[in-house]
Length: 337
Ligand SMILES: *Cc1c(COP(=O)(O)O)cnc(C)c1O
Image (cartoon, rainbow, N blue to C red):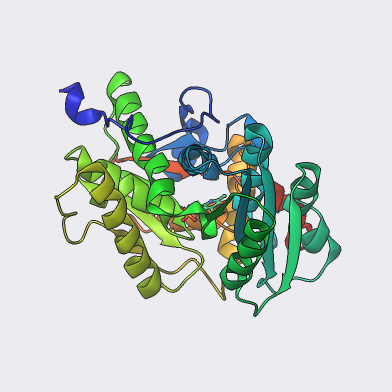
């Protein structure tokens, strides 16, 4: 029984960055206020390193792969307020690797909080070198050129993709799927739905691949796209989920229709605040004392609230929301609130 609930990931090099399991908590005040649905949160914002957040799960496998390859430097890409960039800098510091971040000004915010506070302040404290690119620049092309330069200077460089969402990075969320099932089993709970934001897709892809590899229904995992369009998010996440599944179950195919994404919360674009996001951030903060972020979890939680209010869930459903972190974003978005 427990064999199907656990995944053997020992074949993949893993650099430990997280202590133990993150807690699952019941939001009783919010659940009572909303009515007939029980809302739980998986606290992936509660991790000790570098302020924590979902990217640390991916980085356990990315840094594992980097150190197995003998890397001395890690280079990655992101938006100016990337949480992935900040946590890559933190993980690199802990693992003793140099870190370079290629950050683009893709989000149309030009105040000093957005440009210099939040994650940017932390990136520099964590010792990363920042390459500041305009919004229309090709960050990955720049990162590859920079990696070549560093290699020519004698460095062994590991290049991590946007959001850390390679198949290797997705393994961190396959591990999380197994962690969630084990915690649900211990608490005698069954979650009808697991809700989360989808940016670069790796978090959902890993959860989906992990669930499918444990013969659990992956369509219980429902994400809201906050970065790309719905169509592009689904196709990108399907590809990543299939790649991660192939690592876990070689020779087997991920079932069709495993990736479920709900549209309607992205608003005008990535990193652009919506009224529903503001309401969700304020509600969870004032009713439960929990802090969402303005770019990812705030928009996804707004989607969850909308589903509950429009009675999408059967009475007494148990819904688990994945809190993915991103608190420094609130400081960067001061002027949005
Ligand atoms: C990156 C990020 C996400 C999205 O995860 P992806 O794997 O890129 O889809 C969600 N929440 C926060 C706080 C993030 O930093």
